[in-house]
Each structure stands twice: as structure tokens, then as C-alpha cells.
Length: 387
Image 1 (spheres, rainbow, N blue to C red):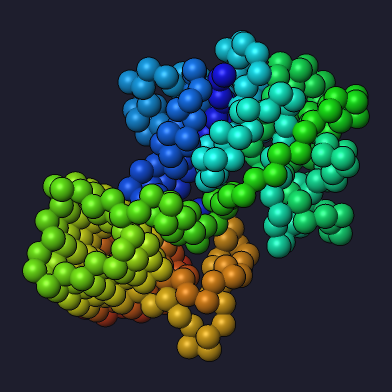
Image 2: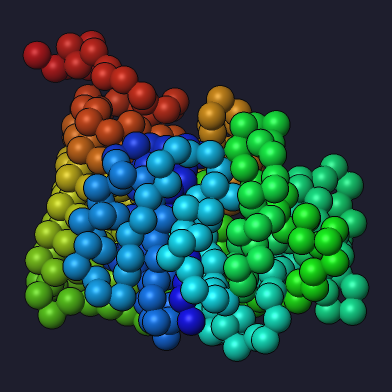
């Protein structure tokens, strides 16, 4: 059996993380999302990844993988167009999966054993932002995108078992209101034409829509796989590790640090004296200097967090943390959420980052500054004691 992974999405709601890496290359437990998906699909004879030609990080990572075929979506015209790009490479029945979400390995293996084509569904407490399904006698009979009044709590989670009939339907659909060819329109057409699509109920699905979902997926994979601490990492005296955590090659931890569970620390990182890291992702080549606190936070690659920096993760009024996403304040649903930091950010000493605040790549944050709003452009260093 073959598999097709759609991986060309931009992930604008995940900024600043996706400003310098593809969405599918975001590290979870120190491995890219796409690498986890590829691992879960290892039973397939061939894995086709649909990417963009400018996604060098995906191309470089998978170019020597003999089981993976990289193909390219020439224009970003939606999920339907992306899947259609794979038509001439697909032979018969195949799994199709979104490459920027996290699925349970057992759910993926189970859909592969079905005889009929199938669409995976998931019970969701808030179905409005998704495609909502109607099911009758185990088959999909209706699909409505982002309904104001959902008819069920079952949503389409982007894991399918298709055969080549899907390509004929994709060629019949028109551009949607947002100027894209939508895969769901082709599925609606199949239903209208009387094609039976089996309901495949999944146990695990973590859509990576917002930055805090990255932390949710990281936690799930650490719980599922346990601690992953490299033998090439240096753990100095006085370090307390609350498992499960991931610590990658070349990283130096301590002395006297507290690494709390669900934390992932990438390659060649340094976590200095008396630092506490809790439920956070620190990506490759980043330094967290002494006497700092990193809670429920994402720190990008090649960052330098100077001494005494605090990533606050709890509002004073104890309400849910809200994050600005594409100009709108979005409730994260999280009581605890720290900062979201892009690549190559440098913090001066004693910086305080307020809950849910974002810092764009390549920014220098002056010493003693309080990050009370997102920082998307350079601050005047002289105002804060710089030269």
C-alpha cells in the first residue's frame, strides 16, 4: 500500500515558528512532525510527500530516504490540488494524511486494513471550526464545513483511505470562495454520486493549528514513547529530571537544573546553572542562561536567553491565556501558556516575557525589558540601556 502526505501548507497561524521552517518540520520530542508521520507509515511500500519547491528543509531531510518520493505542488491552490499532484504516482488504494497534524499510529495502521474507502472521524468538544460529519449505519452521508450549528460532534480529521476514484472527483470540482480546490468538495461529490465512504473512528488526533497545539503534541509523543535522552548529552551534577523528557545530542544541562516533564531540548543546547524548564520546547543550538525560568514555552533555534529571563506562563487573574493570531485575540483554552519565540532571538539579562507573547525571528530584546506585546520588529536598544 502507498501513502500520500500533504505537506505544502504555510501554517500562518503558527507564526513566528513557521516564518523560518516548514510546518511539517516543527520538532516534537526532537523529531519533525513529518518524521513521526513517516515512521507511523513505515509499513507502506512507498510514501509520497507533496511539498513546495521552496521547502528546502523538507527536501533536505527526506532526499535520501529510499521509501519517500518527493513531489511538488506547483501552485498553492488548496488540498484538492495538492492531492491531484500525486495522481500519476498512485497505483491503487492508498492512505492520504495531512503532514502537519499528529495521529495515533494504531489509528493509521487500522485504516490501512479496511476493504472500503474511508474517512476518519474524531469526537471534538468544539466542532464548529472543522468539517462536521453525518453518519448513517457506519457510512458518511453528509459533510458540512465550519457549520454555525453542527449536526454532530464528529469532525473530519484528515486521515483517509482512498482509491483512484478520488482523482476523477477532484477534476470535477470548482474553485472555492477562498480560491482553492478543496478536497472536501470532492468528497461531497463522491457522496452525492452514491459512493460508500466508511466512517473510521480514531482515538488520537492532535491538529497543529495554533502554537499551543505544538506543546500538546509534544506532550502526547513523550507520554507515548517515554524519555529520549541522548547518551551524547551531558547531564551535570545536581540536575533533577522529571520524566518523560527529550534531550538531544550535544546538549549540556546543569549544574543544578530542574527539567520538568514534557520538556524537549534539541541538539547542542545549553541549559545553565539553576534553570527550570517545564513543559517546553527548546530547539537546536539555543542557550538558556543561569537563573532563568522557561514554562510552557517554545524557544526557536539559535536563540540566546540571557541570565535571569523569566517566561511567565500564568495570568495574574488566573484566566485563560489569549494569543494574537492574524490580528485576532484567540483564547488558547490554556490556563498556563508562556512565550512563543522564533529563531535567532537574543534576550538581554532579566527580561520578562508575559504569557502568550510572541517574538519574531532575528530580534534582539533589550535587557530588563518586559515583553507585554508581541515583538515583530527591532526595539530601539538605546532606550533600554544599549549603545
